Length: 476
Image (cartoon, rainbow, N blue to C red; front, side, top):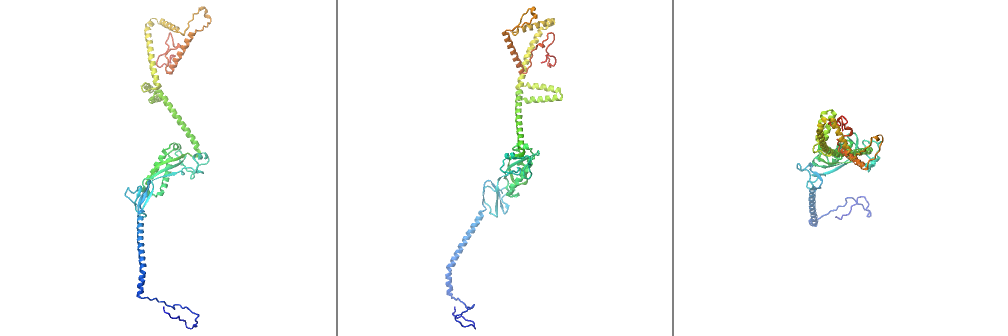
């Protein structure tokens, strides 16, 4: 810098105590030689070297970071698919994979990272509960069905739009609560038609439609009593609707959690159902008793006999007497077959035994009559009198009969004679034996072939022995 004095403007007083600074009045000049430049470069070399080292290190670190980011980006495409989860992979929005191999399997799946590639996954098995659409609104959400029944008022009608219900085949209303289990059978078809978030909405809509169509086929009583069939019909209708949508959803199960009539009439319907169940019990008991009686009457094969009896009654109703006679004969022959048991077989066997005994007795009487035929033709009156006297003698010789001889002079007197104890005991024993015999004949359902006193005629025929036995006092 030069050491020249500052110049003042002309006309100003030359006052040493007053100084004025003027702009651009000083000039600074830096001058250096060639040796100074070399010294400065030498002084700057260590700094330049340090800066270069730092830049090279930063560049390498940046390369490593970029490589790490690239590797991280590539590895971000790997995704672990847990069990029970299904889905697909997309490459630039298009489903990736060969035909039939689009669905990802559980496990670690390598793929392009987002946004080049993307995994779209969802739970394979899901469920939907519908507890409100067909159920009446209640002021207390924790109210049970029994509490709702007790608090229901028949004067308060069900309001559409507020109270859920469904119409049955007989025009009644019913309330339902349902649960549906479904699975994603074809994720490709499902994701082609809708997003995973809309799956539950579609299933609910299909469920409501299936419930309305199914319940319309059942009466209220059938809906309440048939436990499984309505749920199966709802499932079939839901699956048919989903198949029409081609959305890849399969219905695995439908459960009717609650089903009831309107709460106001539930108690009355319960009493009707109780009475119906009691009626079923009584009918079943009556069937069992009828079956036991039929088996006890004709054995296990009673159905064939019943059918013949039914045909016989139809012929009688139609007035076909010839056909009824033929069927009556068939019934008799059928009852005599060896596969018929029970009381019918017992009666028929007793009847055959009785027939054999009666045949033997009549044969004996016929032989006796044949032996007396010659005497009867010679003197019929004498033979009849003789037979009558023989019968009287035989009767009088029994232990129950007491014979008293009274002179003719005492005929006008009433004589009371007490029987002996032995004769009275004999009479009691004979009466007891007779009653036992009659009881046995009645229990077997067999008629007695003994002749009564009023059926015995000396001079004319007595009891009729014709098959019909519809005339005369000799009929059984």
